[in-house]
Image 1 (spheres, one colour):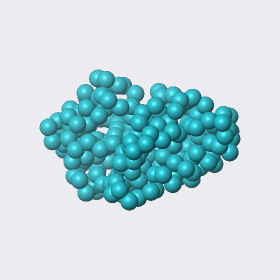
Image 2 (cartoon, rainbow, N blue to C red):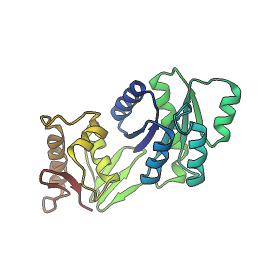
Image 3 (tube, rainbow, N blue to C red):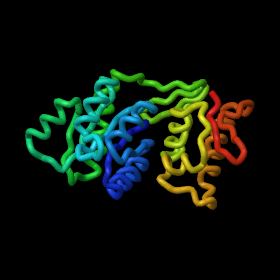
Image 4 (cartoon, rainbow, N blue to C red):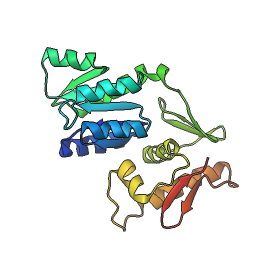
Length: 223
């Protein structure tokens, strides 16, 4: 599942990104309100996490503008403002839930799961890409009618490929979104996990190459 996090505090954004990736989500980060809106226009997200005190456009404004585009996507607001009026303003601008800083990551994770369950009826339950089917709620992926037995990291990587099916994905992009790492030219973790995924596919059907390599550029999930 893809999340958008709008948070201008770099350290907090990095910590949340790492924790959410470990939870099996893929994540885009925006450092200001306008960047958040730009990313929302370009991508499809299952949930948005908004800090209120954002540069350029604050979280209230971003929330209202997102609601003008999409009435279904769950929005969770984060803020150091804990006054009742601020919470009311956040909810009135279209937020579904409100979490006051500082917070425990376990609580954030639980609230995300609750919002995703609550919004499940507004979004497709199954994501289908060719012969692949992803159930975000159960975190299961089926290929040609058979369940793939994936590790948490394999699931996250294949989910990212599915949400970007047909796109050419570089090592750097995969490392950033799936492992929260920067490409240093030495890591072979992407190649290793792509090989793992290909083995899963070939165990079911060895006549097709589901993930192809574009030499020196990256990988593509073929629909």
